[in-house]
Amino acid sequence: MRRFGGVFILLPVVALAEPLVPAEPPTAAPVAASSRRVVTLPEALKLAAENNFDYQAALANAQMVQGQASRVFGAVLPEITAGGQYVYTSAPAVFDLGSIAGINTAIWPDILPQRPLPAGIDARVPIVAANSVYGQVQIQQLLFTPMMFLLPAAKPGVAAAQLGAGEAREQVLLGVARLYLGLQGLQQIEAAAHDAETVALKRERDVMGQVAAGTQGEILLLRAQTETAQARGTLAQLAGTREGLLATLESLVGAAIRPEDTVTGLPNWQPGDEDSKPWEQLYVVKATAKGVEAQEWYVTYDTLQFLPTVVAGAKGNYNSNKGFVGTNWTYDFSIGVQIPLYDRGSRYAAKKEDEAKLRAAKAKLESERAKARSAWVTAKANLAAGEAALKQAEAQAGLAAKAQKQLDAAFQLGLATALELSDIDNKRFFAASQVAQVRAQLEVRKVEMIAAEGRLARAAGLDE
Figure 1 (cartoon, rainbow, N blue to C red):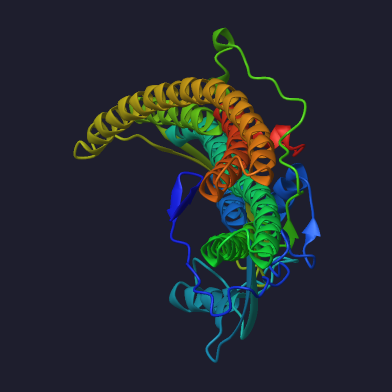
Figure 2 (figure 1 turned 180 degrees about the vertical axis):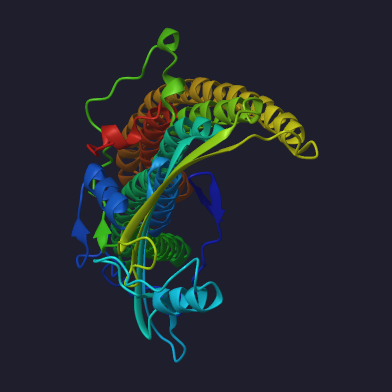
């Protein structure tokens, strides 16, 4: 059983049928697949911002909220409608002045003698002709309504949705950065495992020569070949883990990429000062603050719902039958007022409900601020601890490398045993693996610190 990176791995012990046969040359998978494009961490973050489906879904949701807000502003715009109709009737209506005059003359011949109609007056006035055409244009304009006090709530609502999309992007970028840096650390562990395999092969050749010379027994060669098999087993497990993580990274960024071989991070970054409250720049904190602002306008609207609604209207008409009006075109203008007197208490209930929502929104804002500050303090402490851990791991790795060289020289002179040599080889591998892991973890802590200040997208060179 061998441990690397805090994880114990069971390594196979290979029984050797032919102890004197030398081990085959190393055939482990390369540290990184050559078919994948090598990108830097900022480049990987930019790919994730362009291709990640979770962020695209959050961005589409923000755009949907923006579209809904445009309908709110449409309440203050005029409503214009136009319509037309053609009608044919088998029973046209005609007002016949000549017939009416004839009837009156017949009833009262002495009082109303029969006279011709004045010039310019048609004896037959069509009211509804057999073929008629009607048209109408109507305009309605809302002059005032209490709902206008909800219009200012649309802007912070849209801003909150956009900031929510920004928070989704930050989380996606943080996940990609952690995976990218973890892969870099794994690649460094693979490099250390390759070194361990090379050392094991050298030990095996040396012992084989000693066995051939009769100065050592075959049990020592068995031990050396077992250590070589263990090193190759570790390489195989690391290669499998690496390929799985590379596939996960590809799913997040939407491209076949691999990290650089050396552990890198985001350049040109310095943590903020606590007095400046950098956690206030987190997208989730700013989005929650916008939510509070929008909810305050709802309370204002509930308070002013008693105000009247005033609507102005204008309507133009066309009638192919002039009738008694004497013209085909007419228009009307109106102003309507609606005053709410009592609505079964619904607006009072709505006000209490919105006031409760406002209190909840303010409490959530303070909670988000407290969580953001706690995350920032934790990230800063973890960063300091990571820097100290890296110095310690590098010192241990340097000590293990020197001890391995000294013990190897002593073994060549017969002053050290094979068991001591195997132990120092393992210690050097563990120390080198620890350095790789701690260095990658330190870069992760830096990224987490940037994310705790809401600056991960900006640090990667992405636009707001």
